[in-house]
Image (cartoon, rainbow, N blue to C red; front, side, top):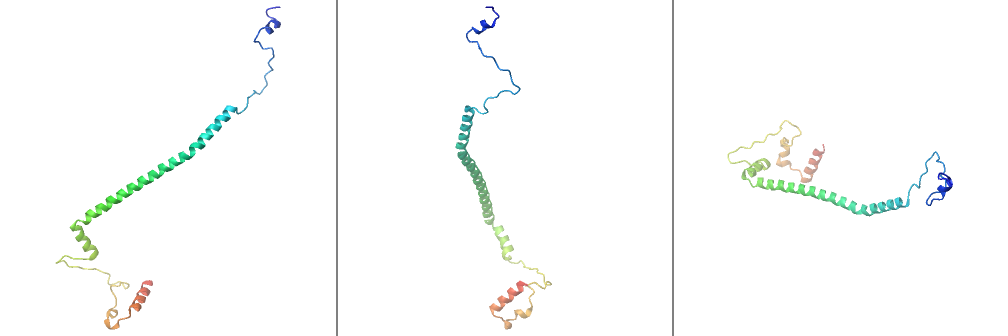
Length: 153
């Protein structure tokens, strides 16, 4: 046989004897998902489902911790404000000033002057003088009903 003949090429061990088919226009693809890819996807899904609960609890715990820290800061600020108010109320000058403002107290020698709108017809300070007459005293329930009617309009 000749060195370049087909018969000698077929007699070699490990050589293919089949012919390759002609290539088609569309390339041949393997399966879209292999068994390993499906198994890997299932494992990832299982891992995600396993970690979802603890991760949600962790996030909720961190949020609650942040809310409690903000509440603690607000309480600390409120405590500081109340302590400042206590310190201010321990001052005798502040007590005297509050007594003058709230209770209309005056120091000896001072004169108290209260200014009102005397020209305003709806002013309760400018009540008619005949209502203050002790001889025309009305029962308390009539006075109450009269004041409710006057307040109503």
